[in-house]
Image 1 (tube, rainbow, N blue to C red):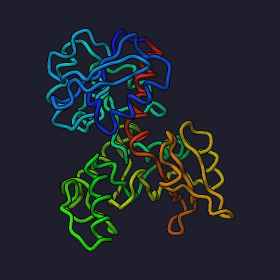
Image 2 (image 1 turned 180 degrees about the horizontal axis):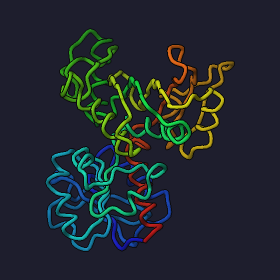
Image 3 (image 1 turned 90 degrees about the vertical axis):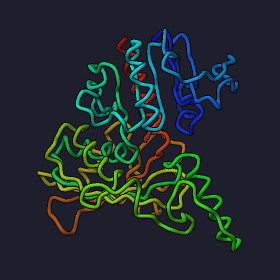
Length: 334
C-alpha cells in the first residue's frame, strides 16, 4: 500500500472513471489527493465516504505523494509530470507524451507486468486503440509469432473527450432538425458520417493515431519486426472502439486454436455465436473492463492468416482501467 496517491486530471472523462475504479476497489493508499486545473480548484468530491476538494495542479503539488495516476493532454503531462518524478513519485501516465521514450516503460499489465515493476519514474499507459489490439495479439504472438497485422479501427467520439461527445449529440440534433452546428473536436461533421482521420497527418500519409498503433505495438510486445498497417476512422458512436484485425502468423493457427487462445487469456472474452447473432458491439461492451472478440475466421487470402472483430470500452481498459491495474500491480509489490 502506498502512503499517498494523487489523481491528476481528476475532473476529466478518464479521471472520473479512475476515481470510480479506485473507490470500488480495495485501498491502494492510506491517503488520496485529487489535482486539476485552476477552474476546478475547490470543487467538492466525496470519495470512499470522505469529503475532498480538488487541489491545484502545479509543480510543487507533489510533495509527500508516492504514486500519481495522471490523465491529461500531452502538453500538461510534459509540463507537470517531470516535477512529480523529481519529488520522488512513481507516475502512471495516460498521455501520449512519454510513451515512446526509450527509458519509459509502456505497460499493459496482462502482457508485460515486469516492465512496470522494474520501471523508474514514469510508466506510460498505451493508446486506447493499441491496448485492445495488443491484448488480442498477445496470445497469438506467444503461440505462433505475429508477423504482420492489418487493422482498421472504428473509434467512438468519447476518445476525443467531452467535446467529442458534445459534437456527436449537437451535430445530430442539428442534422435532424435542419439546423447548423459548429464542430469543436472534429474538422468534419460527425453526425451520420465517418471521418478517416484521427490526429494529424505524419509520415507516408499516416495519421498520428495510426503510427501510435505501429510503434506502441512493437514496444509492448518487444518485437520490432512486427509489421502493422493501420487505418483509424472516427464514427458516430458514443463509446467503445471497434476494430477489424487481420493477423499473419509465422505458424498457422486454426480458428478453434485461436478461439481457445483468446478464451484462456486474462481480460479477453470471446462472443462468437453465429446462430444467435452473437458478436461484440459497442452497445453491449460499454462499461466493461474486458476486450471482446468475435467473427473469428480464417483469412481467405493467406494460409497463415486469421481475421476477427474486436470491441472494447476505450475509456476503461483503453485508459482508466489499465492505469488502475498498473497501480494495483505496483501496490502488490510494494
